[in-house]
Length: 146
Image 1 (cartoon, rainbow, N blue to C red):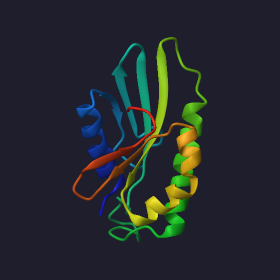
Image 2: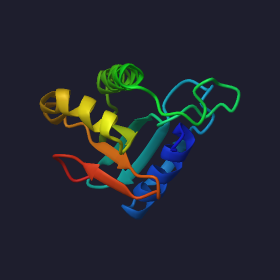
Image 3: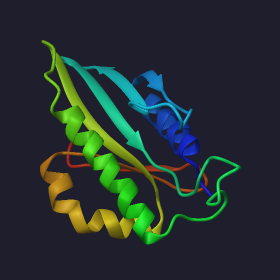
Image 4: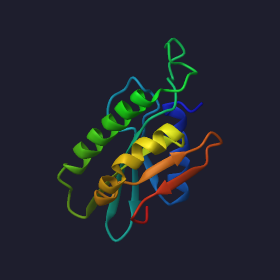
């Protein structure tokens, strides 16, 4: 089962393979803020902020540790991620800096189902989804080239 730090680590590897430099990688789930900040030099600078969620609790003392989050918990987690994305996309960009925001999620039926309910809005806002499977494979669902 993927924890949030697992998802973050796998997505960082995938982003590095795409030419991004990892500016921040937050694997301490108690720490607030952006989970991943990745930067890529293009004609301008692309700064990609990613909010990650896991499939189970990363806290061994938690009642949910080792158990999949249920549908309601997944819906809350995705809602929290979308709120964070809205905050990021509301930031005023600096000159020659393109701000983008994405969500990294375990590739589970629950996560796929909840995302499918809001997919038209996700596409409209150009939010890439980084789907991570249990082997660490990352598939990117995006209408723009990440």
